[in-house]
Image (cartoon, rainbow, N blue to C red; front, side):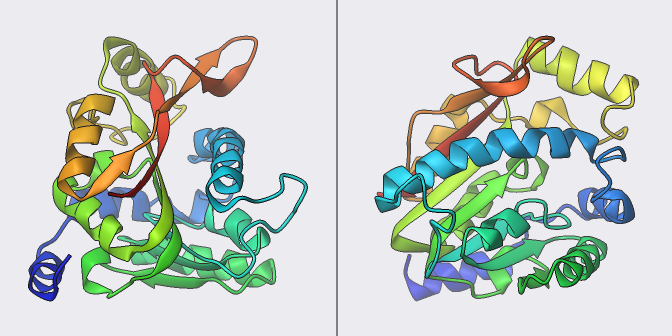
Length: 249
């Protein structure tokens, strides 16, 4: 991306103020595994299992190494209160977390401090922060909440080092996801009301097209499925939610 494009990108916004306000109101409960973010606490181990395999594969690491990101820089865009940033820091990365809601950044910083973790948290528009050269760029369950998906993916790509790894996840726009992730989950109180807009869920094909426009190449997505016996788990079924790697073309 040239300097003129980068400057133009930084002047445009991807943050939806209503979305930022919605999640900012949940900041105080983010680290409560029985609170409004309980579903994220259940989802996190599944995402981390995929990420650990992807990290070892991409960087040629040893699965027995407890700090596979030692010496590397990681960015979590849309970090909330740090549920992903803290495991990345424990894997050895120098972590930067960015979120649209200042309340989330405050909660994230406080929690990291109590855990003795040095994480660089910043609130604001990703494209205006001048973040570049990250070995790992993550944005999980965020793309469906931004105002301009193409621009947001371009901002993520601009932050990625030439040989870096990106990991994305989001719900899929299918009838099962509408029934389970929106209607059932919100009506039953599994996630707060108004968290999801089904129309904003990108399909894997749409995400691949958006990624190509941002100069990215997607890997093969894995599904994050749910069953009464297994709970949330990695699967070949992409109908509810999916997670995927990306790299610069």
